[in-house]
Length: 140
Image (cartoon, rainbow, N blue to C red; front, side):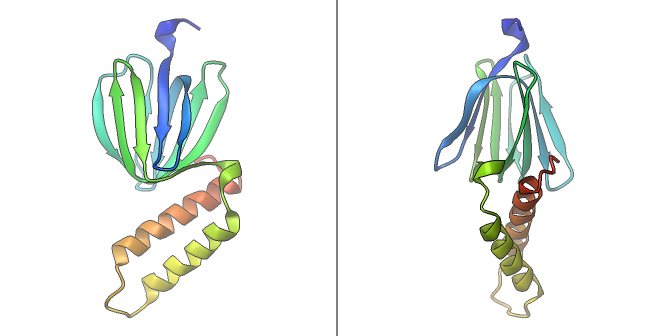
């Protein structure tokens, strides 16, 4: 693969740099039904991202899918940086913890407690559902 057919990708969370490698493409699929693809020589941009999955195709055409929460993507001449609150590969997902988070969020959403932050509960539910979906092997 030629140099112009690849770019550097960094996926960063407060806990770790999850990905730092040369890739051929990236597609971000969000929980809001939107998607964004990045190929080599993409126009520079900075954008907010939503919780979803990130499909990464490496320079050997191997595809990897990871969970990412909300954050920002920056595309520049040097490469792509995706900075998110959390990012996990399939094997890193704690299924029991994700199920418990899903149940907590569902209970909060049906609660009549006026002090429940419904937006925060919806976001927690989306994160849990994406983690569970990826852990089950669903890619998008």
